[in-house]
Image (cartoon, rainbow, N blue to C red):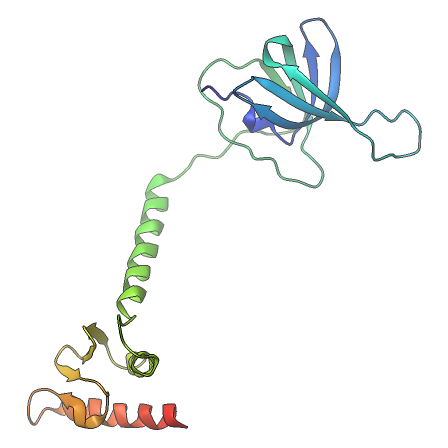
Length: 195
C-alpha cells in the first residue's frame, strides 16, 4: 500500500483543496488505507485561548496543494524519507525537510561490534550453574580470561575448576605456574565472596 503522506505527520501545514478551500493546522494522522489526512486546527478567533480544536478529515484526492508552515513547537515529527514517486506540490517556509544521507557501512560496523560484545557477554553466563558459581566466574573473569565448559570454569584456556569451585577442584598441567596462580586468585575471591 502506497504511503505518501505519513512523513508530514506532526507538521503545521496549509492545505488548499481542489475546491479552493484552505485549511491550516497540524497534521495529526495519515491513513494510507483510506488515503485520508486528519488535520487539527485551532479555530479560536478571540484573544482567549481555548482547548477546543477542530478536526478535519480530508481525502487525498481532494488536496491540490500542501504548504509546510513550521515544525510543531513541542514535538518532533516522525519524518521518513518520501518515496521517489511524484508528490503533490509541497512547499516549505524556512523549514528544511531534507534528511542527511545514511552511512550504511558505519551502521553495519556498529551493529557488528554490538553483536560481538553481546555474544561475549552471553558466553560469560553459565547455563545450569548456581548463583555462587556465576559469582565466582564473574570475580575470576575480572583478572583472568575465563570461559564456561558445561558447569566447569576454564581459566587461561588450560585450568579447569569443577563444582563446588574450591582450590581442591582446580586441575591443570602439573607444576604449572598458571595452576598455582589460579588457585591463589580463586582462594582470594572465595574469601571476598564469603564475607
